[in-house]
Length: 259
Image (tube, rainbow, N blue to C red; front, side):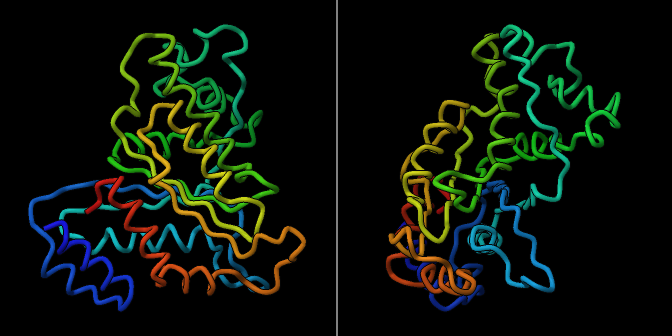
């Protein structure tokens, strides 16, 4: 069955024959897959082409949507109002994930709902908390930002501290335990693989199950002096259908046990 699934995924990626997946893949397997896009690029009249990172993420979710028994969700984090981390931990470890900090045990969420005018509105990080609780596999996608991931992804990572701290401080089960994490990092240049490696370590420390095999990276050039001309999205789509791109996707999906 593994060889069949392996062949089917290659056929799908190369020719987009969705009906083959439905005909061949085994029945009865169920998995919930969440994709969280953290790019701040929103297509508009001046820049109509979607970002490369969100394009890759949606491509992966589309593969999963065509596997029987799979359910997917997509979150564009840039459309949410996420209050920045309030550094509650700095006042003492018990302040992070405190039972007094509302249903999500997060002061940023609780205080912003009590006084939204002080925080630019009510925090919507609860949408991400709930979606992660629902999921078996979580994809995080980010574009490269000056040798690092996006500021939006960093904001989300810091707000996940309330989940990790339930284990490290309160001795409870980490809500992220046994959840697989896939990482997508794409950009013009500036060491996308190095950024992904750091994210593997970070998400592992938070409590996800991660591995370097659970990573998809792409960069247009290793020349740091090469400025971008035009959108990279058509190029990354071409790469996804290349033999090298397919091999990278297969390696990632095997780790995530998607097929």
